[in-house]
Image (cartoon, rainbow, N blue to C red):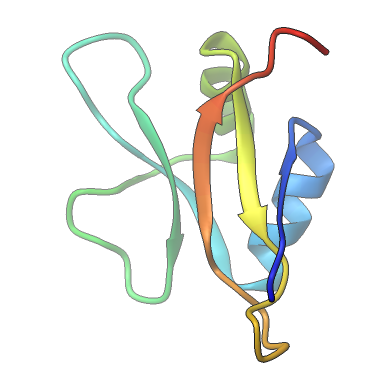
Length: 90
């Protein structure tokens, strides 16, 4: 069974994404910032590429955490990821 982890560590997030050839991206909305994404493979049309500095500014401004899976149940590198609200308890 595969396990998910959550982090707010910028270096950990960037390392995870780059190990999977992921690039920071955003889907622009009417408000400030946008919806963060990690883009893999061929660029998605709706995704606007951004640099890591802008990515983490939006990430921190919105108090997000990165939920991710390191490996699939069969031991391969997983691309599963999701942005969630930070746990206010810790």
